[in-house]
Image (cartoon, rainbow over all chains, first blue to last red; front, top):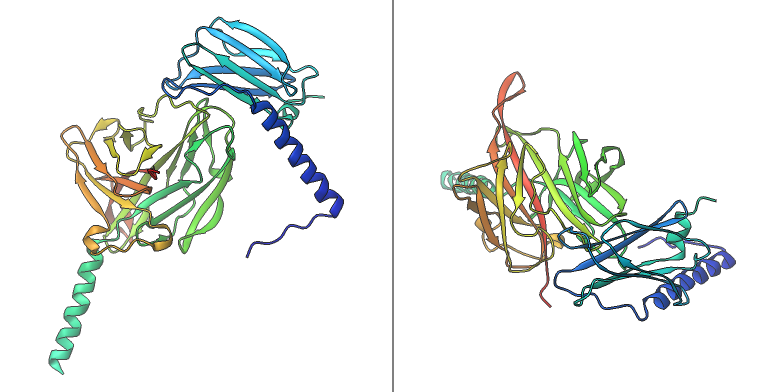
Length: 129
Length: 257
C-alpha cells in the first residue's frame, strides 16, 4: 500500500493551484506549436542559466542547424524574438520580464521544425536574484 | 530400498545437471526510461544489480569499483549517488538522476570480482545501458574504451519487439573473433515460463569480427553478455583462480502497437 502524503488543506490547495497553473502554461505554450518532422529529426533544447536562456538546435545525428528561423514566444503567445539562424550556437538571450514561460521554435525549412518549452519553474531555476 | 536410493541419486544428479544448463549471470543496470522527451518525467531512476534475470534470482552485489555516466558533455562519477536496495532478493543499488541535457547518457558499472564457487571462477561483468534524451542520439555506435564491451551496431534503444539487435564484442578495443554471447530476458513478474531450461539462456557465437545478431521474440529488457577469460588470476583461499570477464549490454525493446 502506498503511504499517503498529508498536507494542510491550504498547502495542498496551493500545490494543486501551482500544478494547474504550470499545466495551463504548458498547454498554452504548446498550442500552435509546429509538428516536428520525423525523418532527419530536428530537436531544440533550451535551458535557463544566470538570467539568460541558452538555445541549441541539432539534427538527431548531432549536426547543428545551419540556417532557418528562430522564434521565441511568451506565455501569452506574443512574439518576443525572431531572428535568422546563422549556424552559431548556442543562441543566448536575456530572460528579462518573460518569466511566465517561453516557447522556442526553430524552423529549418522543408518540414524540419521543432520546439522547446521553458516553464516558469524552468525559468526560476536559472534566476540569480 | 537400494533401487529407491539409486532413483533418488539419479534425480539429484539430474537436478544438478539441469541447474548447470541455466543460471547465466548478468550485471544489470535498468533505467526507468530509455528515451526521455521534454514532456516526460525528466528524472530517471536506475536499478543496479547482479542476477539471473530470467529466473528473477538476485545475487549479492558489493559496492562497485566504478559506476559512471558517459553524458553528452562529461564523464560523471556516480558511485557516491548509489543507495543500497534489495534487487531480486539480494543486495543491489538504486539511484535517481535528473536528465538535464540532450544526447546519449550511457551508464556503466564495473563491479568488484564476484566469487562463484559453483564455477570455480571469479566473475566481473562490465555492464552498460543507454538513455537518449531530448531528440539527440549522436554516437550510439561508439565504444567507450572499456576493458571489454559490446559496441552496438543497432541503436540500443527504441527498438521494436522482434527487431534484430546487432553488436560487436570488443576486448581492449579489439574485436573478439567467435566470442560467445549469452542472451537473456529480464522476466519481470515471472510471467514467462520457459518450456525447457535450455531456453532460458540463448547462446550465439559471434563471427570472425566479433559481430553477433539476435532477434527478440518479445518486448521488454534483454541482456546480452559476451564472456571472455581475463589474462590474470585472482586468489581464493590461497589458490589462484580464473576470472570471467563479461561485456554486458541491456537493451529495451518496445511493443509494436
